[in-house]
Amino acid sequence: PRKHKVTVIGSGNWGTTVAKLVAENTREHPDVFEEDVQMWVYEENVTIPADSPHRAAAGDQPLKLTEVINKYHENVKYLPKVPLPPNVVANPSLLDAVRDSSILIFNLPHEFIGNICKQIKGHILPFARGISCIKGVTVTEDKVELICEYIGETLGIYCGALSGANIANEIANELWCETTIAYNVPPCDSRGENGESGVNGEHYRDARGAISKTQLAPVPQEYPPVDHDVLHKLFNRPYFTVSMVSDVVGVSLAGALKNIVALACGFIEGHGWNMTAKTAVMRRGMLETIQFCQEFFPETVDEMTFWESAGWSDMIVSCTSARNWRYSKMAVERGVSLQEIERTELNGQKLQGISTTKEVMSFLKARGVQDKYPLFKAVEGIVDGTFEVKEIPVLFRQQ
Ligand code: NAD
Ligand code: 13P
Image 1 (tube, rainbow, N blue to C red):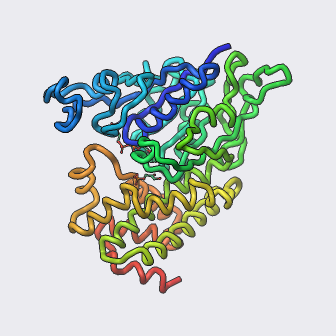
Image 2 (image 1 turned 90 degrees about the vertical axis):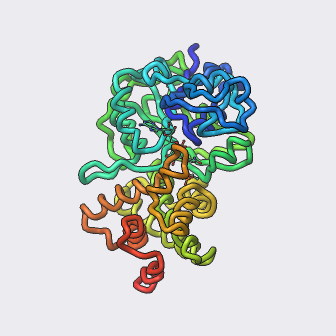
């Protein structure tokens, strides 16, 4: 029997955290997974921080981030002070990192996924399966696509989604939380009575419930099937409770759209309003999120998903303690743009809400339905400087 080789594509704050927890699990399930977990790192030079215990040995000269991670087992730039298991192997070569991997975990800011897929297309196992931990959408011409849908179609594989109320630094420090994984085992991966694999070239139902154009190669019989049980083994930890569902639309869009609402909550708080105002915005934001899912993915979205970690829990945590909230609050308090804050305060980390707002609004405008989403529209206006935070209550009077 073969074991699944796992690669995490991305090594930011969340990418590194997920690599850590997955690597803990590959060690615990040596019958299912190869122990080493490849982590593709967008290579850059870093200087070990002055307060780091590695500073004395490493000195103050710039070093390659991959070399630092592999030598000191710490991502000193994106997840400082968190020891990584030695079986997380940082790799600066994308093609080398994905070679022969049967499970690919996509975990980087959504604006980079197009370029990544272009590079690895044709260089991955044809029967690889994906999980996207990315919170965002791709908008091409007049189409909005889930990130996992985009990955699956571009690479010719099946890809599910992981999303939840997950602050990377908390999970990296093993503070308990929940998450949601949405994954529909493709028909060709369900095993026959003797464990035999499905037929080459089978199709599956896509996120819109239609038969996909993608012809899948089944996961070969020598490998354990990639099903809910195997994915649970890969991601569930005592401090990270995984709930498996099949609604990839609800899980993906709740995770993407809450970043717009989180910006609104930061603006509200930066303006001087407090929790009561924020809960009004969260309620309105969740209504617009559900409306968006029902308007554009009516066939498959399940309203119960909004009661999963990927739904209300993520909305609440993102609007009270995540980066999009924290730094949009700071932008209003300092009277500077969000882009400026991202550049000066985030040390390379990204605010997904800025581009998601623009992408979602461009899609809604192309269809002439932007006025049905007053909160999303207001956030775009505030980011662009054409709408003032103090005008937000007007949106509610008009309902
Ligand atoms: P991050 O914002 O911490 O880091 C940015 C990453 O982008 C770095 O790894 C950097 O090397 C990389 N990068 C920069 N330029 C690049 C390029 N040209 N090509 C490829 N990569 C490049 O990233 P993150 O927090 O790991 O976020 C990844 C995804 O996870 C996002 O969609 C985010 O919404 C989601 N997420 C984050 C958290 C969290 O708490 N951080 C929690 C849940 C979900
Ligand atoms: P931020 O990217 O705003 O930190 O959000 C993290 C997150 O997704 C919380 O669930």
